[in-house]
Image (cartoon, rainbow, N blue to C red; front, side):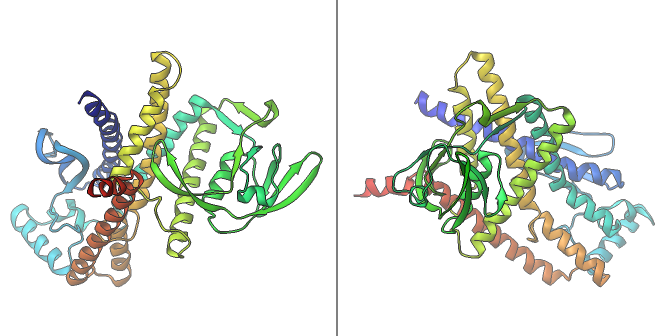
Length: 406
């Protein structure tokens, strides 16, 4: 029982802490830009459900914490519906009511009567805050650990693997893939993972010669300590520095660290877009997508790895902090990216509605908004179900249940 409770705490506590931080920053992005434009706000909430704590400030804004720490929201004064984009009739009714209750000109303090560009900036501020948070966290990490580059040196080749068939040999140094130079082992791994069933052209340095090789990554099933059972593309190479010349390190100042952080965000977004593109083109099944269960599992996994590392309590604490900062940065990028998708219930969908309004000079009709809202909910529900299915499969739950039934 104690082990079970410990496992729950190991996975849930880091997950809740990371998610609470990211959601708070996301909502603060919306809130701060809205307040900068003079928008009236009723509530700022972290978590949903019954209020655990709250207070109302001198501006009439209720700051509250809900009992379910899996999200949050900013409630602007005058919100009429869940989409937060009322149509022409809704705006007219709201304006009449505000003028009757508060006098002419009162509507100018409400979100829906602000210029389109201000509303768009308020909406975009949430995802932007997620990317800014990731940049800050990555900056801290890179200032802490510096820049470490491990050359893509081949340490071992799995017999019978695509790499062995292609002719790779230990001590080969990979110089380029598909004509693009590579200097870090992580670049090679990232390219291989995103190239299942696609032939890759490598150039390696072997002694004094440069040798051209072609290998096709194949999907294999691996048991990952953090994610569980995953299908991932491999070619059968083990990359590892074989000497001091294959490893470089230097400390970074804040400006350099911020630059590396921005680069890391770009790499993460590029990898995400490439993977999604491969899903839509039918070259990937999407089984690497994860939902809340997968994120919680990963949070527990990275926490456990950090705590099981070598060193005293101080070193383990530092390692855990560093690991969770990196994890939070990656999750923040993911949440920012998802919120920019052009789905009506998300920030990206609101931006699409505002783009229409800017061109048509009127809000999207209510019927269209309602239909879009329902379709958006269905898309999100489908995506969550698919991601949850992936998460459960990675943990071999269905095989376990099948064994119980046999």
